[in-house]
Length: 112
Image 1 (spheres, rainbow, N blue to C red):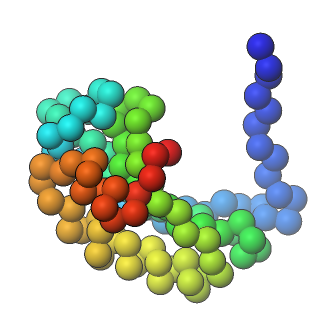
Image 2 (image 1 turned 45 degrees about the vertical axis):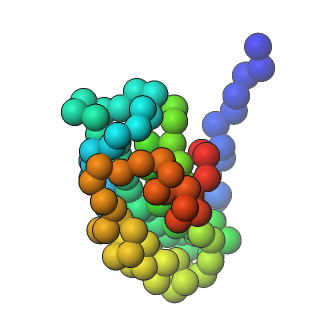
Image 3 (image 1 turned 30 degrees about the vertical axis):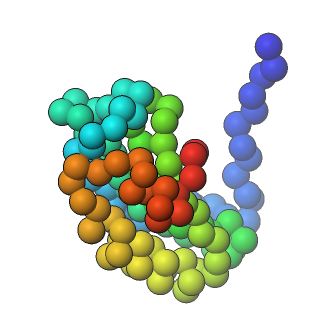
């Protein structure tokens, strides 16, 4: 069996700062498995490093194990801040309940 190495932190980036919002929403699909009460976890996060090349924004929906859908965006700190706000306001805040995998795939989410 191959040993998996942990990723190394950049020496130039002493701190990884993350902005994140999350919530649980009901679903009609099986996310292998769902959280209690037929719920999935949706979150938007933004990593902020001192160097732009490490910055990104992610929005993702996960069941209670290894099934998830996500979208990523990588830009400058300013672009990432705008994308974080955009995804929070246009996707995260407006997810219908109950939600489905098809709904997220139509928005451009892909298998994680």
